[in-house]
Image (cartoon, rainbow, N blue to C red; front, top):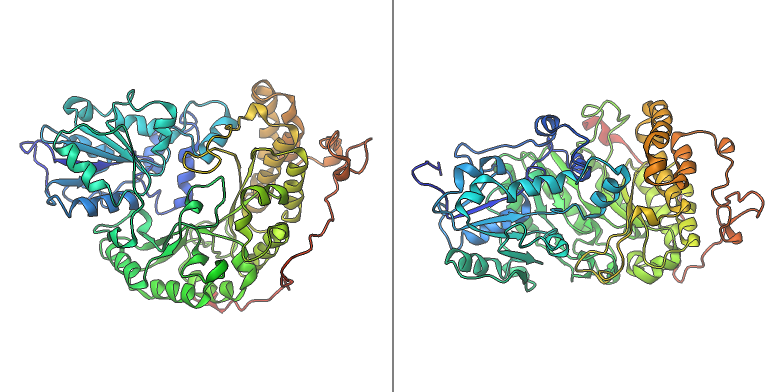
Length: 566
């Protein structure tokens, strides 16, 4: 579908921002850079090294977000292929013209209000708005859109941010689409094409599985959806509130085929929890089905890499053989090897997990379903056992862990620090974040956490996470961190965030805690301190009695014959 200037545009154009339309060289973890302030990375470097784009010969996008591909598939059931184009924002001037009726934009983080963006833009404290926010603004204000003024429809997981910020009219958006849109999206676009007035905010009706279409063109990272929803009912999260269902294997393999045959070499299994695939009652994992799923994907010709999205920790403790049987399948398809990055000592598998907090009280209050099929009172033991089992098989998880949950006390923060202390030698990556009240979660009315309200313990939590990351992932930069963090504090951060950052900065720098004076816990609950005099921190040794017997983890020596295939 070569678009000629004489054609003067395509009826429906689907796009997104450069930061969200890139595959970052097939490395989804590099995409986190888009959450940083836009002023700290030169635009040329972003475009040349991170915003990697691939076009088809006709100028359409070779790869696009999975959600955008779903919308495309649905629209093609009503409009012809000449009337719908999915394009990179750099090519909008070739596709938006006099005949363009609608531009549909998908977005994950248009205002920089997501967890990572809010946290790290705030911590840096300079450099302006997040890269995601900056790039979204460029799409909305694109000269072709301004010139021809088609209707603008914005959807995706971050669309709520625009409504929250009150920017719908300021950005000239005709309609914001919230929720799973498969049931409603065709009707919305039909109205827009006819020039009918749209509601400013449209809340979609949840679709039945039969209403979800297969993609017809490849997604970024070769994404395929294996489950939707979660059902654990964590109050800070929106996907967990949705009923969970698993897609049939033959359905999944049809999308694997679309991705691979049209140019992808990676398959990214999109899910809220990979261990919930066809799970049994009470969130008990179905090992046979999970192993069959990944084995089938791995055997498909042309699949070079398999990347995992999210997983929960309790299933790992419940059935360690799940990790044992998956490891040889996934290790042979891992991207994360010394050949890819010389800093990696050996091949490993990674997946994102949610620790969220070490406080059992907060877990019980806001996310008690996260421990099922175990009692939430065992949370710290579940976390340490699960990560220990993963590490035994060279799974190095990326863990989100937050501070600032509603009603969080110093005692809660100390319990999180205790858990971090137990995990200080674990092979993993910690992502400390601030609590954000997402629009469609149960805690949506709670106050957004700001750095100026963090106490010294919470700063210490952030510093501890990053100190552990540096020790494991970047030991060769320790000296740079030592001088860099102290210089940054003296030059800027003591004015930006105050003196309460000093001890955490010293911890991050790696200086001996004896030098720090170890006074960070002075004044906290004495149950967690060694004395009123020096405030020395001693992890609590309290053991929680499980309501259900948990297996004790034994250190295993797994077979590593799969490495012969790497």
